[in-house]
Image (cartoon, rainbow, N blue to C red; front, side, top):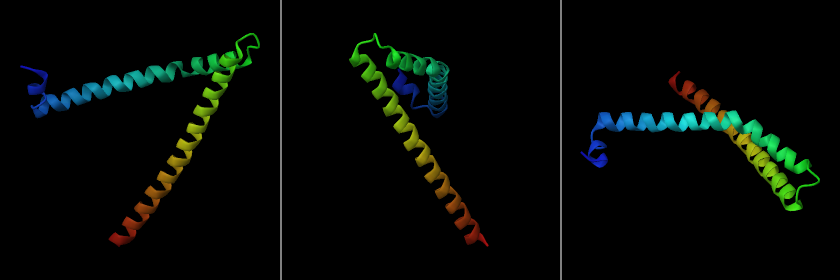
Length: 96
């Protein structure tokens, strides 16, 4: 039986999705484990006066880009949480 045919089976399809999800979560976990090493590396390159200027600039740009994205994500999460609280309070008011 081919994968396409197996994926037509609901039970198999669900187990396949679960396995893919688990593999993805394991990969994310590994990335999180080594992220501090990546930051240390970027910091080391940025501070290394013997490193080529292009490497130092690239490391600095990477730090700034990721920091900016982290701030954007924090702000977005805050907005989502506010919206969720608003929706929850509205739904409670509608059921009374």
